[in-house]
Image 1 (cartoon, rainbow, N blue to C red):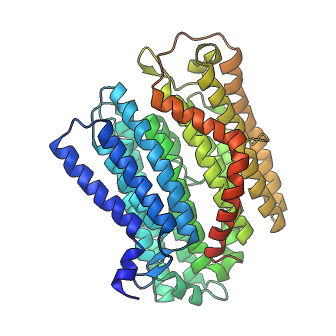
Image 2 (image 1 turned 60 degrees about the vertical axis):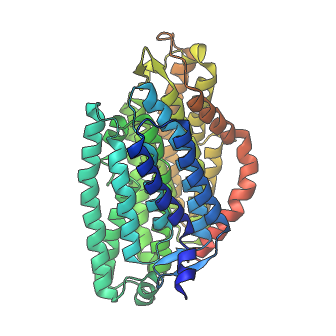
Image 3 (image 1 turned 180 degrees about the vertical axis):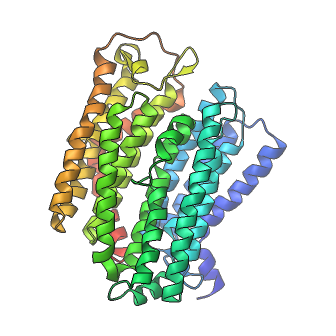
Length: 476
């Protein structure tokens, strides 16, 4: 293949990289940026998403870069979530007197890294993508510099992220050593009839590193503290796009490189999935801070996504992709509501703060209720369809016991979702709230409408796209 063909596969990444550099120079010379700066960063993401959806498919750079239906599916969803996070975050920082132009630039760089993760065709591009997006996320977590909790969150995320990167890199080096190549296609040839002990050890370390990135148990220890300390719009971004990118990378590694060792790695994934569901369901019961509560909720939901992947079939990968897209809507919508809510200039982040919210802000209270019911998995909301896909795939692949245990975990988690709804609708109001910003209110209500009824229309498009993406990832 020619260099021009290889370059054509990276047009979305080139758009984001060039836009980030131009915006960085713009902000350096004109720090007091406004709505035009925000609009330019969102436009860059829209252009990158369009380029991904309409660009050529194939493999480039000696197999290190892949453009297929799976990467296109992931990139469009990732760029859409990133585009929502930018105006949400910019307005949140402005209300608190934090003037910074770096926020949209870091979102673009994180999206660039996540796009590389979705298109990784070998261990080198995998690691570069993971580190590029992680470095941007470390800074985003500590973006509110005057807040001690935000600085602590950034430091914790960085230290534990370095540990996970070490696990991932060690696993990659073992895989390279025992297979003789970094390319997924060559690794697949070495693991065609199952992974030998050395290769299997490398795969386990690689799974551990990726499990940290999606905050799956028992590698979830950073999640509650980082979610609580980081700025609320940053948490909305953390909980959505990076998890989808890591799950697609997960599926690509397991399907393209270790498809012949399915019976070996699916056992590990089932254990991680069930541990995640258990930790998320039971630890969430004790939480009063909503950001920590939804951190544990995200751990449980990642467990459901991994359960779909553990099926080891194309149907399971399709279920995982549908689940992650619908979950992204719920989590971004909920944190958009939190971003919009404050009382006397103080963020409303605890369950007690939400007392009687329906009487004060009925629109936002209704939206939060919809997101909670959806995350619970109540029909006919989007979360129900997400779990339906996952449990169906698990049952069809013989994972009946894990599916039942996952369903029980969902029943346990229902307590903290319903408790929040009860507090918002029936408790005595805790006091008048500040006027919510228009951007956060519009985003929250728009995403709430997606949970129902728009999800019924959206699924007619998401389902076939996810099926095509799953077929491209190598699992039958």
